[in-house]
Figure 1 (cartoon, rainbow, N blue to C red):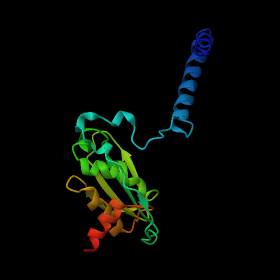
Figure 2: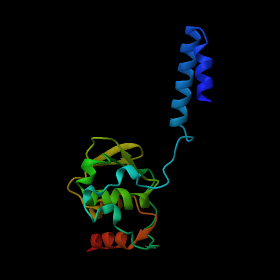
Figure 3: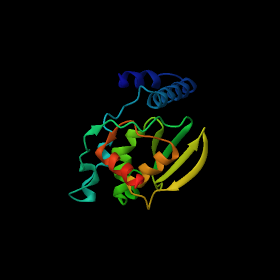
Length: 172
C-alpha cells in the first residue's frame, strides 16, 4: 500500500506533491498523538527495564497483596505530578524508582508521572491547578514520598502492606 501511495505521489506535479506529503505527515503525527496510537499495557516499558541495577533490581520486587483501608477521600482540587528521567537518574535512586513504578499508580488519577529525559525527579504539588510546592526527590525514599502525598491530601486508592507500613510509621 505504501508503494502505491508513493508511486501515486511521485507522478503528481511538484506543488501537489508537497501538499500531499505534508498532509500525510500531519495525519501520521495526529495518529500518534491521539488515542489511536500504540499503547503500553505494562506500567514499566520493556525498554526501561534493565539488568544494570544488578541481580536484585527494584523492577523485580514483588508487590505485597492489596487490602482495603479507609483513609478518607482525597481533598478536592489537590493534584500532583512527578517529573523524572526514566533512565540514568531514576536508576541511581532505586527507592524513588520503586515508588514511581510500583506505588504511583495507587494514587491515580490525582498523581501523574511525566517521563522527560534528563530531568531530576521532582514532585510538583498543586492546589486547584496552582503549584504550591516543588519537592526534589533525590533525598527521599518511597515511604517519604507516600507520606508527603498523604500529608498534602492525596490518598491512595488501594493499600498494600507496604503502604500500610509507610503510613503507620507516619503516625508514630
